[in-house]
Image 1 (tube, each protein chain N blue to C red):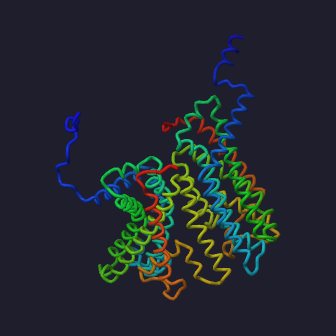
Image 2: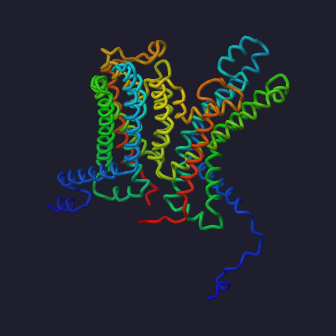
Image 3: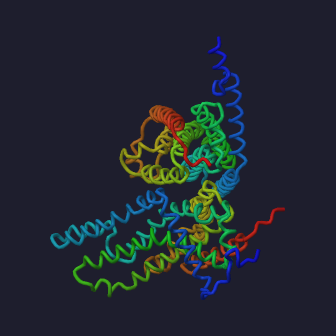
Length: 270
Length: 290
């Protein structure tokens, strides 16, 4: 009896309902801090620029879903905006707290560290996916009839791609002090350079699997990389395989991030 | 208590030009960047292209003596020692530089706004122009380290490994081209980075803005050109403008191509002036809170 009382009096032993409430509060706080930030304003500006480009594209002589996807959505949205949103909210979810010196207040709470990390992941995922899907919807709406078909093709790959990117960049942000810059370097070297290399080396990139999902869901439109050589060298995997790879790798990255965040002794907290 | 008793005294030595402070700002900025391991990681990745070219030039010099066909084969990889080859190399390095500058901008300029470094600097006996020039030169030094110096190293390697030193005398224009291209990259990118970083101080939004300028403007330029069939829309691509002017320094590139080098240069000069105005307005020793 006395041992139970002692355990309940310990500040770390929160009741499940209190723990849930604390996590929800942290989720709301993280969402609010991340959303009402300068990166959201910049993200909005970049999205507006993309919308302008798409609107200009609709004035093209022969707009079609295939051309919209190959000329606009793959290079501007899938290859640029989506990873940038994920870096913006993923890498800064923990990294922002470190930069603002507020991580110490989070770590001294009674919420277990894995739960803090999981809550941060949910917040970053909601923001990155919400932004990406929202921008995709606006781009497709602006594009008119070709956009309606393209939205269906892109919706699921966007959600899966965001999940993988956020879990990866959140891990980088938790593990390294300059998480944003390392995420950026990863994106540029592995996603952009390796992602466009011939052969199977590109399979380590998230962009490859997302593109495979897009090409399979848009098979009726005969989608694929631009140019005969690029098509022959792309060596796609099936959409099912791509989904499985993304889900498994996201789960592994999330678990690794929780482990690192739980064990890491942050020395630059104050 | 009199100031003399507290240890304060008038400076009796010879005062130096405040421009020397700009050099101190450059030195401090570059050392601050070089202390970070992330920078060394990025510089290592950025120099992969240099190492590849370095090795190919060495291979070419060694194997051409034994088999001329091998040298011709390697020429396909642009180790030809011509101005065009160096311009292509610098264009590749400029891409890496843009990535590095995203990091450098947040540390060199953004942190001065966030942590009060600018107030400290401007409380010394220097004026705004000394601070601005110092910071611009710091960013320019980073660009030079990644783009210009490796190209000069390749130029020297090519000349030294050729059969005689005539390569240096016959290709003096190439050295001018390397320095010219490097100057274009350093001036435009440092001004643009400073202007952006003076508005967005934090790393994440700065990176987003910086990438947006280079990636999305190019896409907008391509789309507008496809719609109107007017190549002058390509002037929106800042990177391409820099490459065009840089290639012109080497004497490479098609002079009849639209947009002309003059137009590209005009756009870049206009951009630099706008950036300079933004920088001058944003660099203040005090912040007025309303």
